[in-house]
Image (cartoon, rainbow, N blue to C red; front, side, top):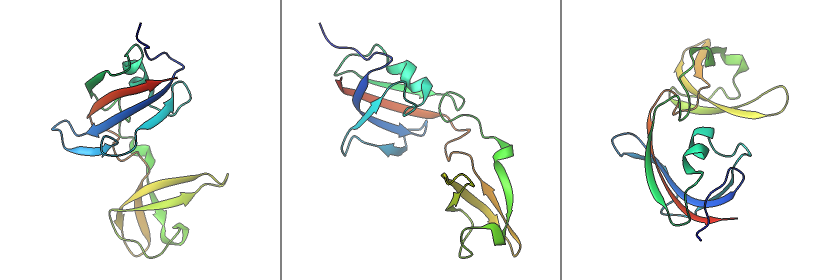
Length: 142
């Protein structure tokens, strides 16, 4: 009997995230596969639900709506940040900056616009609000 992915499995897999037209955005197929623990927050819940029940060797492609992938683009996560509060003064529009929260955690933001006094920074995931095509190949299950 072949082994299948369970809700708490440690899964080794290849994945490719692409735009709906097939334009690849991120892939492990040409590199080392990923090993992820289901239920540990390492993978999007919608993707975990899709792979539970798949056997070793399965290869599937899924089309995910934005809400099921990286969520909707949330306007409240786009903020105007005064230049003196930016981690660096040497920035350009459409560049990614890393910020440190008061608790020490780090997060990224995309500088959408910059002027003499402030920057418009988008803290949404870069794929928020966008549908994706996901290809998965299950290599191993522990």
